[in-house]
Length: 189
Figure 1: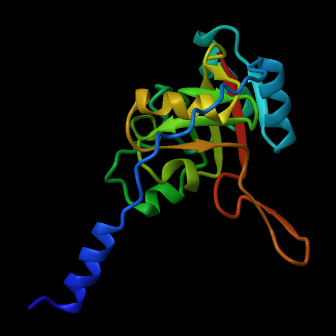
Figure 2: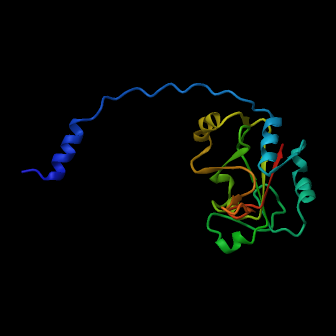
Figure 3: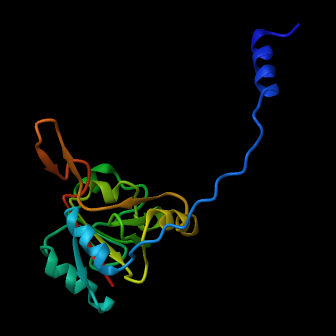
């Protein structure tokens, strides 16, 4: 004698629809230029700085941010807050500036893919007060369709980051930095 559960599951198994092929996804084209990316980043409240000589990166960081900032970064030898995956939230919360490497940028929305391996700690890009993302200008794609096609090639967990954190309520009060960095600077090398 079979239970009601077994009867229901047998009925479901017996009445499966035929498998159909997935539709062909069209190729989405767009503008992957530095100018388009810069325009969008600026439109969402971020800043883009051209760093034509990557060896000048530390100098540019020091021109943009105060010398007394607590900095976490695998890219700057003078970073003064050591961070790893086990770092406590209290230490992370005290970081003024995180300087991280982005893998590629998306021109249509100004976002940058940052895989976990580049974050030092998953929470760092969200909890730091100010975020600087270093991006090779040759690594821009036009659309999110092209971006998602690249994601599996750069590791597992990661996130698309775009501009400073913003939120607004029903009273139309805009708050910057409520859920993430108060400022975002993209350093194009």
